[in-house]
Length: 195
Image (cartoon, rainbow, N blue to C red; front, side, top):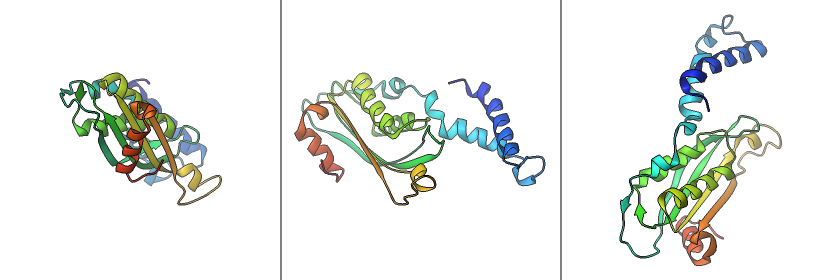
């Protein structure tokens, strides 16, 4: 993705063009004068800032561990939001992430940052989970990783089938959490889910 410095003016102009195309020129409607700049900044700094983060940098520097067991580390009920690439509509929900430590562990806030790294993009819910579990295995050296996402997709609520209250649940498993049913069951039990 292009840098914020390069993208923000282009995005501001695109939003101005969009508003004109729907008959709401910022020059004609005073409440819209600052909308293109505000909207461009929101997209670049809040909705799509995940492109600026490298999962490796988030997970670097974890402490060495001598835990020596296969106990799970789980962070659950983390709010996340993202934007679906099909209609550019948001979706939001909770993420539950667990991993079996390898040689290193990280502070729990790093797991929350990892969720945002993959969620703050134009992406599918399934891709977020796969990105998180893959990063924990690749960059942290985890023996196993799991991510369960439970989200409301606005493309199913305000358009198309219009099913308010519907939830999409996706799960991604890697390493020992993919191959060991007991570990997977322990993860699901800890987040109050069922296999």
